[in-house]
Amino acid sequence: MSDAARTLLASSAARVEQTLTNALALQPEPQEVARPSRLVEAMKYAALAGGKRLRPALIVEAAKMLGREDDGVLTAAAALECIHCYSLAHDDLPAMDDDDLRRGQPTTHIAFDEATAILAGDGLLTLAFDLIARREVSESAEVRLVLSQELARASGVGGMAGGQMLDLESEHRDRTEAEIRLLQSMKTGALIRYACRAGALLTDAPQETVDTLTRFGEVIGFAFQLADDILDVVGDAEVVGKATGKDAEMGKATLVGLLGEDAARAKLADLIAEADALLAPFGERGKPLSELAHFVASRTN
Image (cartoon, rainbow, N blue to C red; front, side):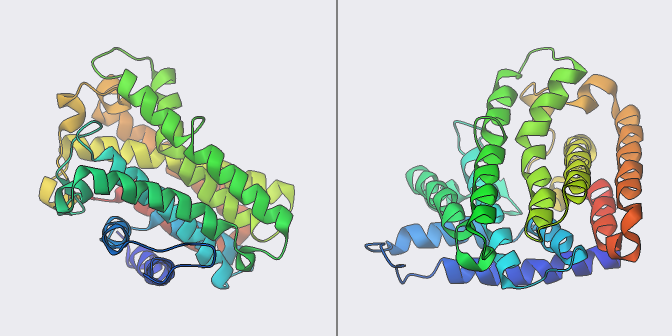
């Protein structure tokens, strides 16, 4: 990872984690009855136990590129991270990917128990929509509504959750390249696409700019999954922070498995070149997002 990418991720991560910490206080919000301490602790464990915070960084840097960098952007970024962290807590469960390790630490259901991990995921999922609806995200109720609806669609049956279903159905079955790309665009790509698109929507950017950042998100979402699949084949579990080699063991459909590592790496390079081309019109302002795109391709965990 370049020093620039490391600095960008660390800076946005610290600010987003503080926003999450504040949102996960034991004190109930208005119209809440009470917050059980064990559930809050499990939610904190799932949401605050490290991680790259790539998705919130993309929102923060996309909005900053277009001229906005206030606390409302961080609230929107924290909402997206709640969705991502809930999905990880649920994905790690025995009924799903059955992982004991996440980010080098015991997964939520190991640290607590399966029922608590499920509820922690449920809590983070619903907290996301509490956060995205807050006035500091945008003075415009219409913008907040659009952000909420698009987050639901990126997360749900037509996005991440649907992609997970396709992934489960793909185990020990032959899949075409088009089928693999479809499931990956939903399972992993939908939230990354949303992050880049939301950064533009938060700034009331013109439609052309929204479309450009939407495509940028699609490109790096695909790149992220390609890099992840390559890491599962060649990565060191201690560096990656979770078990490797599981895709092949579980018979999962990946482009690395279908095309081979060399072809996958060549495709990854093409995607990052396209990402840079999309950012070229923004000049120097686009460099932080470019750094994050290159991080996606070169990451080791």
